[in-house]
Amino acid sequence: MNIFETLESEVRSYCRGWPTTFDKATGSFLYDESGKEYLDFFAGAGSLNYGHNNPLLKRAVIDYMLADGVTHSLDMNTVAKRELLESFEDIVLKPRALDYKVMFPGPAGANAVEAALKLARKVTGRESIINFTNAFHGMTLGALSVTGNSMKRSGAGIPLVHATPMPYDNYFDGQTPDFLFFERLLADSGSGLNEPAAVIVETVQGEGGINAARVEWLRGLAELCQRHGILLIVDDVQMGCGRTGPFFSFEVAGIRPDIVCLSKSIGGYGLPLALTLLKPELDVWEPGEHNGTFRGVNPAFVAATEALKVYWRDDKLEKSTLAKGEQVGRELTGLVESYPDVPMRAKGRGLARGLQFGDARLAGKVCATAFELGLLMETSGPDGEVVKLMPPLTISDDELERGLSVLARSVKGALA
Ligand code: PLP
Image (cartoon, rainbow, N blue to C red; front, side):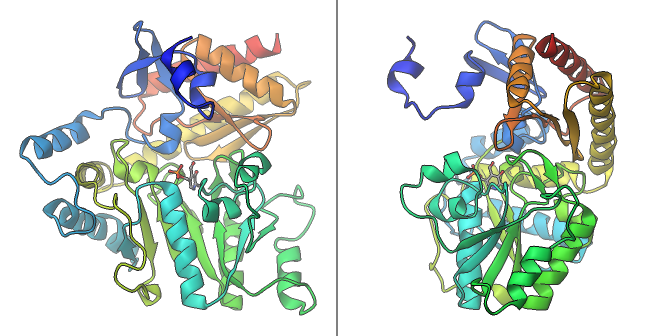
């Protein structure tokens, strides 16, 4: 027994699928303490879009720390925060003609979601939120109330209320018109559906199994929200910061959510940072009405600013993500075609890709085999039936090809 097993809670999870002790990390690789190299197709669950210890971001953080820049500041004004806000406005918001105000909740994705839900309720004076089947929005009680997974929900210990799940895109395999059920309930005064404050949606469900909503469905949802005076919250915690190509995952649909949640890779270097973006007219907060101690992690501001400057001043990263995503998509389709007798499906958008197995145990076996072969991938989906591929966006062509060939060997091994 090691200290992790004796002292750390049973709640730990990733270390069970990857039973080694990691020590170092650079770019697309992690190394365990024996020096074994692992190619990382997990990328901190989407927190490491720019790779591990990215040298450009590291330089900025080290310089800041060596100069005794403020580390912790709650929501006091600091130079590092000013630079982040200026860069975010110039590089992200203005070029997209977006006029969001920026709120700093606590640093986790769940903090950004809680702030969004609370604000939507405050603005509308309504309680009810619409979420979607297989959604994942975090583990705090509000975020869990709009999350689908029954195992995660059961951890709440209290009823999770004030949220109504609706079918996500393609829930009925394309057999029903989009929003048939939702529209009907909204129109029917006998439906029992309370008037919703907001809809919360992921454009691609990461934890839910790499379910990519069609662009038409996202547009339809935005129109439905507008028609019915319901706020639209896009949770871009995992799919934002370029994971699907553009900075915001909803750009592809040309929609303008009322509220956007960002976390994970917005911190650039894997450092904790979250933002809740809100349309200016929704900014009805009283000073201090929603706060938290860790809303001013300045080294994360510095890394975030540098990441915006390095990767988002032009469309190079977006284009390369789309091209690499296509390559992964082709490889996955090729795998599906090579095993016509095994129920499998290729899924995803950009560099958020998945290989879904009819038999969930196979997905687990593929990831376990890949781990042995030095490739980190996790499973997702309600039964863990999807092998999830999320390499850093900065992965080189050679590394990507190497990972895909290990994936192919792992699938072969798991099916043998
Ligand atoms: N929202 C989405 C879409 C996520 O994927 C996650 C985490 O995976 C969260 C929210 C919660 O983020 P955190 O684990 O940082 O609280």
